[in-house]
Length: 282
Length: 308
Image (cartoon, rainbow over all chains, first blue to last red; front, side, top):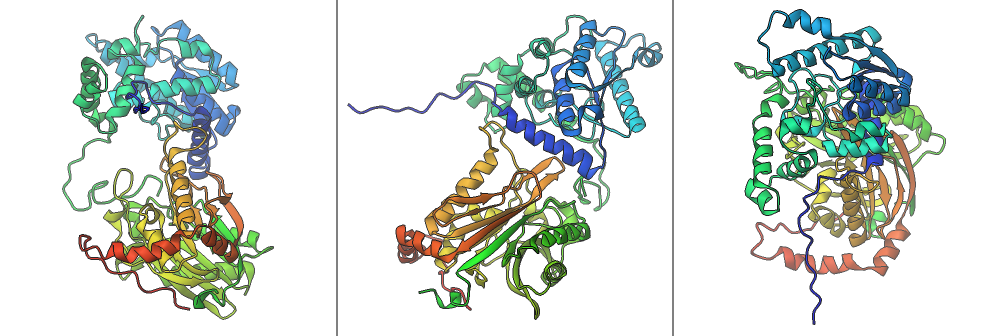
């Protein structure tokens, strides 16, 4: 009898991560981008009470020292008290500088004239006001705003354009949500933040996975293989549910524009970023 | 017996790799940083110094290549003058990568420069053959490719230079070895990716496999000089290293820090490795038959070994 050896079945698991390696790499990235390139020694991080901003703040603390990380809590009137207390736990755990700035008056100062604004519009206004505050605090403190968006939400378009995505430096943007969770455990982010369901916290009971219609582990597993170029048919043949594949593909394909700068009409052969090409760090 | 071109070379050569971490496009400032590295070397001057690809400008330049590219003579002169300031008339061979402007045609190049009391001269120039133009890379959009792979008589004996992707095509080190090279210098700029492995970036692991495979197959030293530092979020992986002719790492620099790597290249190691595993001799015997296969497009032959 011959021994038959078969290749393993395709994995349906989300991509893995070596969190210690990722930490080293991202700390080096933050030091290079802030201190060596921009000569900025302080970071401003909007702390939502969620895992992404907690991990970002922890990485900044390792890169710059916790005394140089200014965590800003930016609650709106309807924000969950649990978010505030979770953000406080991160501040205390990592020894960060903290400031709490209510955005209710700023948001309502505009929305009072927009009685028909639905939850999506209201959420976008809150996100843009939060970013306004973070940039202004950075100017005040001689700091740089550091972004917290992860690869999953970027690919699914689950963020407010020119708000969550605006900080000039983002350490997590090439990590899927499930990898951020693993990194959070490695960095000793308070376990309650890792365990709770991620939420934009715009209304009671809201969760990311409820909004998206798919769990992060399933979305990440599909996204990881979709990005490698596999077709929908190949993904389904590998064992992913057709509905999940269609959902993820649809969101990724429908939001390419959110991952780019504004579309500029090209009129000359010196158009910026079309013909005139210079890297961001030149 | 050493080959004729090697008779004047020392049997042991002190090597230093300077793993640079340049500020993007700031050539003069980066040259000043290099001067500091050379001053560090002055206490124990090496015979041979190797720098990475695009060592004093950074790698991802897009259209700024045309702002910062230099003639080979200007780059060689700057290297030699910097060495002379730090280490006086002590003879040295300096190998380093730069973007080259040759009368308006641009290349990703490296030169070997001999500097001594009599001045300096370019011993060899290699223009990158394989320009990565996929994914994050866009080289062929901005520079032209080289067309020849030459060996040259370096201070450490017959050697060749291959830049970064050049060595991912096994034909390149193969031809260098068959043409007599005992040392392959690999100036490189390799952006790191792959964090799902264990303790090492996947791209670095792949590089190590490639470098060790070259050294082992051909019984040659592989001297890898890696650029380091983040360029717009893309982190260059440093990891400059020396792989000996048995395919073992002698020394390796860290991932993300400007570093100096010191090692000794010893011909005897090449001879012993080739005696123990004579794959290169087998290859030299069989390769002509393979290349003369009339189903191959335009075989050109592999003549033209080192000249003294």
